Length: 604
Image (cartoon, rainbow, N blue to C red; front, top):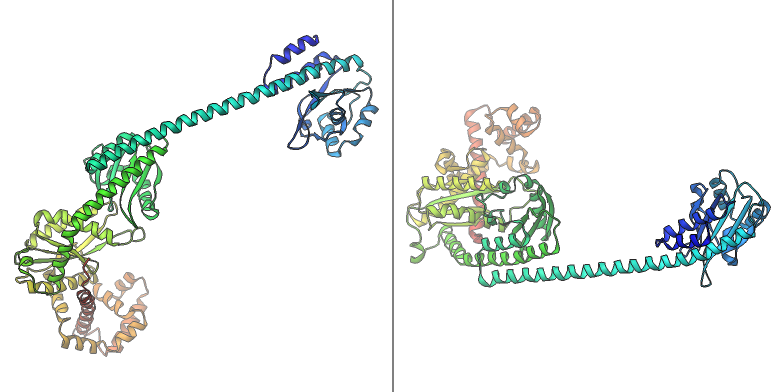
């Protein structure tokens, strides 16, 4: 192979790595005695010559890094001229300053040889700057290289240096061109994205200006993001959706995705920020509707089928602002009616004289229902004012259809309903309310006590207090049923009516006079055990099982009750006396709480 052919071979390759491999391969081809070689290039990072490509050596050769002036390659690089080493002694003398670690690596790369028997070295130089060095070896035979071989290597190195620099320039230009193209693509992408976001903003601005209802907003967002859209209120009730859905239960709509979406809704409410979760058909974006410190609802984007982009997030945020304004507008429109209801309810329950206008709002007789709200997931979401207000809306949706004049409000964390409808109609309506609450994702539920009709406005306060006391008895007795009549408690009505008689209360306090302080010191264990004993058919074993303690513990507590009262639970009249005294004082505590609410005007 002639040097001209080598030049052609080198210039036919434009990649730097291809050039390096070709240089070494051509050197070994054109120099007959060569059986191994290494091409070193200078690395500015480690400030040394690094083995870039090798022929005839093991992989350890690539771990060698030599300094300028060190060994065969380092001396050629430093002297910037070719050199010939005719025997092993000459090679060893040249490598006398080689680092011991590099010598060990060389020995490993050659299979046990530390020094070659003959060697040629030549720097790679371009316009006076050294780029690296080539080392050509014959590992086993001395005096095989001559001056012609050295000239041949020098000519090859000169051509290779030019080709290597050209290849590097070409590679640098190509990389710069790729970067420019990438920047142009990014600029175009950002421009397109900004144009799309601008179009999104203009689209939503039109929705806001024209005052379209929530279904129009949901449809617009679904079109922009190419995903199904659901707008929820604070209680996860579906207020609008696109495409339109028959069900109003978000847990049914989302089905398989609900297990992932419910925690995302809770996080969005807690952090007041967007949340993304993986759904069965792609990512799901949850955006809260924030108004100050409150979250009024959520927007759920589902079925995107792609990664959520900035435009999707921006569109969801814009829609959230409009939906929040719509929710606030609804709340503002309802606020005046709500305040009138609150004032009217307060007047009724506190026994105030009603104005003629207020008196015409309801027709006698009046039925009063009082409800306790309960939720199974207290650790997830506390019973907050906004939640209660949302639940009031649910109740008004159901009850309002039967009696548009019904007055509903919150008092002492209880729902109070005053209506002209008959008790049987109210019971049916409240049962529908409970069924509706059960369909909510969090499965809220309530227990309602329905009073007997009040024939005069002045009777409403007493009926209200009796219904509150009935709820306490219902809870203490662990009665079943979510809606019950106050008169269904039978003789217990005498107990909570007795709670308003001062003489009877004083008698009960004398009966339990020594028990109450001892019970307070034991964190209520004595009387709680007695209540459980009554609720479990006077069975010590059943009571112990209910409270999760040993029967001996129950016997000890009941014995303390007998000691402190000088009464015997074995005697029917004594047991009845203790039960009546306990129940009456329980009612005194319950009615006291509501009297405090009366004094404070605690109506939500």
